[in-house]
Length: 248
Image 1 (cartoon, rainbow, N blue to C red):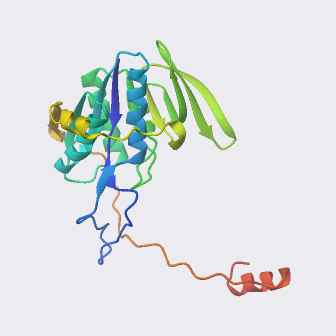
Image 2: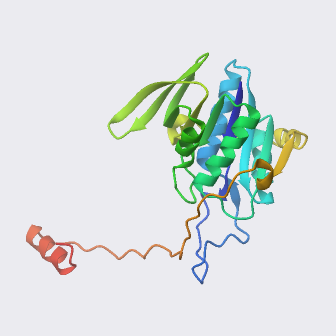
Image 3: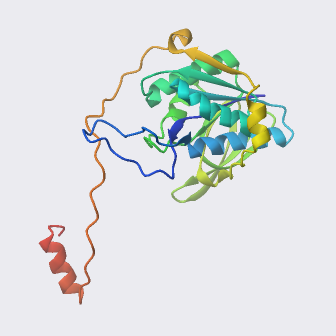
């Protein structure tokens, strides 16, 4: 079995994001960058599939600047067998990402693609669904439990009404939720071993992927500061206060 896992370089979740003064974007100068947390969960699940007895090659894939090699090396240290970086100086949006993954799936003849359900920088939650449509294969999103069988997978997903269990045929696309697992801690010996693992770099033109239509972000702005609360004596006072603010 061959498993492709998406790895995205994002600002570390513990960092307080700062908007540039001109509102043109987020300031990343000197900011700690890490693997998207949902992608770490995806990689951990792929590793557990292999450790559970399934013979599998795990390929970590990232799309972004050359600096993304740092996050791919971390993925290799966690246990991925090899890595592929598709270099792109510009930010890649979900449809473009799905097209790139589709080309890699065909090249690698993948049996399973595991992605984080979303990235914490844009929260799009679109790439997995778009990839499944392009690939014309089943999908299971928001996975909180995964049981792999010979030619299928049973996936427990979190929905508004509770839990839903579905069975999908392989090959397929699965996106991971927070409660699927807890990613392992990377040890120093594993980091040293990762340096010798193969990391292939590709250019977009090598994949023959046509540029997807782009959405342009006009401006970035921080959320408004919260105003302190106020206590009221009774319900009529509450209604009056809400009317004064124009809520009612």
